[in-house]
Image (cartoon, helix red, strand yellow):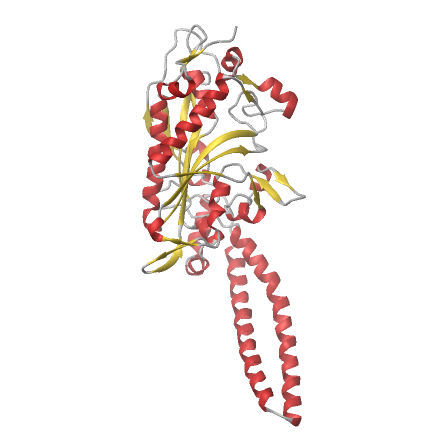
Amino acid sequence: MIDLKLFREHPTLFRDAAASKNVTVDVDRILDLDRRVRSLKSESEGIKAQKNEASKRISKADGDERKGLIEEMRLVDRRAESLTAELAPLEEELNELLYRIPNPPLEGVRIAKDDSENQAIRVVGTIPVFDFTPKDHLELGEQLGIIDTERAAKVSGARFTYFVGQGALLEMALVDFAVRTAIKYGFTPVTVPHLVTAKAMRAMGYLEHGGHDEIYYLPKDNLYLIGTSEQSIGPMHTEEILDAKRMPLRYVGISPCYRRESGSYGKDTKGIIRLHQFTKVEMFSFCGAEVSAAEHELMLKIEEELMQALGLPYHVLDIVSGDLGLPAAKKWDIEAWFPSQERYRETHSTSNCTDFQARRLNTRVRKEEGIEFVHTVNGTAFSGRPIAAILENFQQADGTVIIPEVLRAYMGTDRIIPRV
C-alpha cells in the first residue's frame, strides 16, 4: 500500500508512476473518496463527542429535561448508524483502489514499457565453444538418467519433473551451497509454510492486476500455494514493531514453489525451464529505509558470487519500469547463458520493495526518532534453472557433464556419466 498522505500531496507522481508500470490509476476518484471518507469520519468523531456530552447531561437531568435529552440521544444514535452505513462502502472502495496502486519506481529506474527494453549492465564469464553440436538440457538429462519429465507427466501432467539419482543430488547440492553462502552473510535459514492466507498473499502484492491467475488457490480453505518463500517470510512479522538493534533482519527460505504459468502458453513446454513446481532458495531482508539500497546491492553481490563460483557465464539486467511488477521499486535480474538456445535465460532476480509491503503488513521498526515502516528486499539464491544451465554449459563430447568444483564434495564425484 502507498502512503495516502503523500498521495494527497502529490497525486500526479503516483499517476505517472503507475503509468510507467502500465497501470491506470483513477486519481480523481481516489481523491474524491478520500475527501468524503475523511469528512464522514470527522462528523462521526463529532457525534461521539456529542454523545459523551449528552450522557453527562442526562445523568444530571431529571423530568422533562431528561426526556428531551434522551430523545436527542436517539436522534444522534440514528445519525451515527447512518454514518456507519454510508462510510463502510466508501472505505471499502477506497481501500480497493489504493491496493491497486503500484509501488513507484525509484529514481534512476529507466522508464520503458516492457522486458524487451531491459538492458545488460554487466557481462561475466566466457561463453563455451564446443567442437560438437551441444544438446539441450532435457536431452542431456534424459540420456544421463537424471531428469524424467515423461513419467512426471503421467503422474501430474505437463510442466513437472522427477530429478533422479545424480539429478536429485545436484539439486540438493545447489540448495545446500546457496543456503550456506547466505548464512555467511548473516541470513538465518527458515523453512516456511507452503500455504498462505489471502490476506497475506495480497499484502505481499501478488493478487492485483491478474496476479491471482498465476497462483494456485484452494477455494475451500481460502489459501494460496506460494510461488516463492518471499510470500511466506514477508508476513512473518505482520503487525509487529521490530527492534532496530536486530536489523537488518535477514532470512533465507527453502521451499518448493508452485506457479500456474497461465500466461506462458506455448513457452518452454519441454524441459525444466518453466515448471509448475520447483525448489527455490530465497533471501529476504527487513531493514531500515536508510540501508535498503545497500541491502539490495548485497543480494545482487551474493547472487553473482554464487554464479561465479559455479562457473556459469551470465549477464546482469537492469529492469525497466514496465517489467517491475506491483511491489518492486527497483529490480535486477541475472540470466545464465544457454548454449542450446544461444541466448541468456533468467536464473535469479532481486528486488527492493521499499516500504510498500511493510505498509500492507503493518511491519514497523522502533528507532530513537520514532516508529516507522521497515523496507523489504528479496533475492533468489537458487531456483531450478541453474541445473539446466550447468548441464548445457559443462557438457562434454562423450556425453558426460562436468560438475562445478564447489559441488563435488557434496556429490562425491566430478562428473555425471550417462546411464548404461
